[in-house]
Image (cartoon, rainbow, N blue to C red; front, side):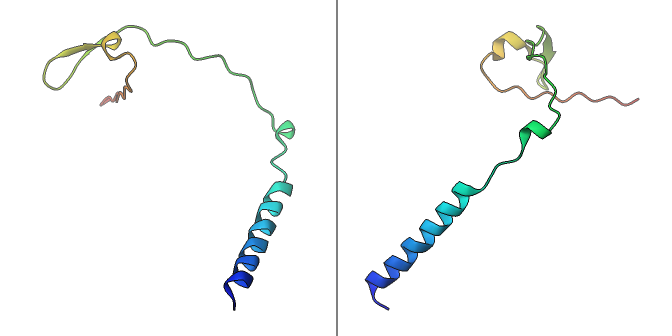
Length: 74
C-alpha cells in the first residue's frame, strides 16, 4: 500500500470518527429533576493543633488546599 493511499484511509477514518461524535446528542438534561442549591458559605474561623503541637488558624491557610479528617470513637 502506498503512503499516499494509507494517509487517505487514515484521513477518511478520522473524518468518520469526528463526524460521528458531532452528531451524537448529549443527555436530555431537561428531563432530569435538578434542584437548585445554595451557594457555598465560607468556613467559620477556627484553630486546630497539628501533630507537633503547633496551632494553625484557618486564616493562615487561605488560598491553600485544606483537608480535614474528623473522627470519633463513640
